[in-house]
Image 1 (cartoon, rainbow, N blue to C red):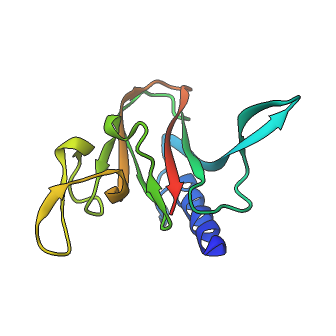
Image 2 (cartoon, rainbow, N blue to C red; image 1 turned 90 degrees about the vertical axis):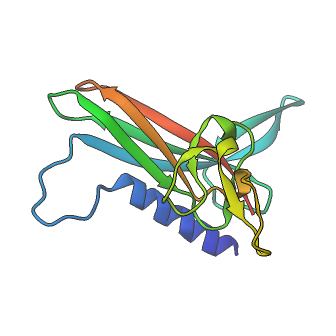
Image 3 (cartoon, rainbow, N blue to C red; image 1 turned 135 degrees about the horizontal axis):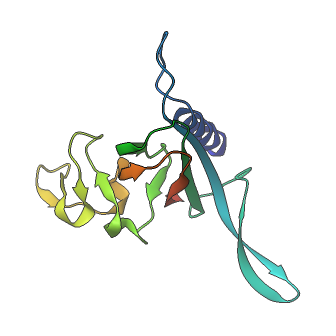
Length: 159
């Protein structure tokens, strides 16, 4: 499972970092680069602290920080730029901060705040969606001026 999750994380980074596959397509005005780190506790000089490290080995319960960095490489402002990230298999959106995200619980068909969405259970009844149901996250950047860079992030838990 660890290798499958790491392979999945690697595939996510590649997918986020590359623009849509294209043949003879014009250069994209915004470059994207994905990254993932694992949150670890370490003890230094007798004090415990948290660090972010490369996810060489992850286990259920580990917290991962996913980052998508963006940079406008064009000479013009880019308006209403959308970044959409699918959650890799083997992870669930962490509850902390989930309420503030624009999410989908149906594979990207519908979007909203987590508290406004519902899912249908195996028994056919609807229930409120929770962080573990999230399949995708989305950010809409109203304007990215030329040369401007930034990043969007989310936390996920290894299942």
